[in-house]
Image 1 (tube, rainbow, N blue to C red):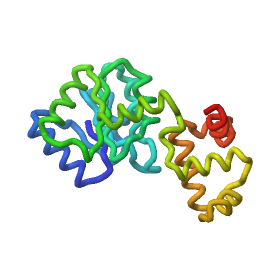
Image 2 (image 1 turned 90 degrees about the vertical axis):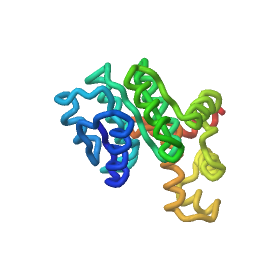
Image 3 (image 1 turned 30 degrees about the horizontal axis):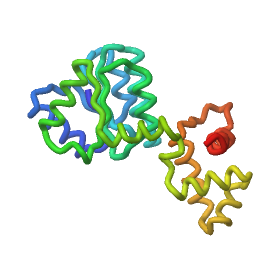
Image 4 (image 1 turned 180 degrees about the vertical axis):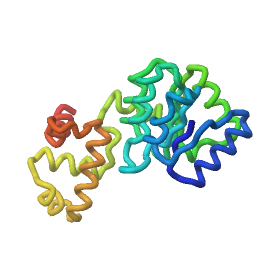
Length: 209
C-alpha cells in the first residue's frame, strides 16, 4: 500500500514497483485513507511519504506508528525529501525491524529501490546514510541538528526574550522567528502535548548542553 500526496510521484512509484516485481494493492493521497483500509487489505509493506495533508508535517510517521500498533508484522518504508532525524528516531524506537527511511532524491536506481522494498518486507532495516549520520549526531548532541540561525534564536530564548525581542535583536521579522522556533521544537523532538511548555524544554536542552 502506498500513501503519497503528489499525484505524479505516486503514479511513478506504482510503475516502478511493477517494474521491480511488486504489486501495489492500493494507493492514496493521504495517510488517513490508507489507515482506513490497511487491515482489510493486509499488505506486506506500507510505503509512506513523511509529510502529507492536512498539515504537511509528520502525518506519515504518525501513520507508520499506528500501522505498527495495529499490524506488528507489517513492513513500513518512509520516503522523504529531507532528513527528519526526530521522526526517524521515533519510528525506530517503536519497532524491531521491517523499517526503512529513504530520501527521495537519493534513490539512485530501480535496483536500489527494489532491494529496499524486499529487505523491509522481510523484516530488515534500511536507512539512508544521511539519516544514520543525523541519528548519530543527535545521540551525541541534540542541538547539532540546529542551523546557526536556529542556535541564535534558541540562545536568545534562553535569555528570556519574546519572539518580538528576538526579532529585534537579530534584525529579522517576527514571522521568521516563529518559523525558527517551530523548527527548533521539531528538531529537538518537542511535540505539542498540551501540557509541557515546549519553549521551556527547549531552553533546558540548550542550558544542559
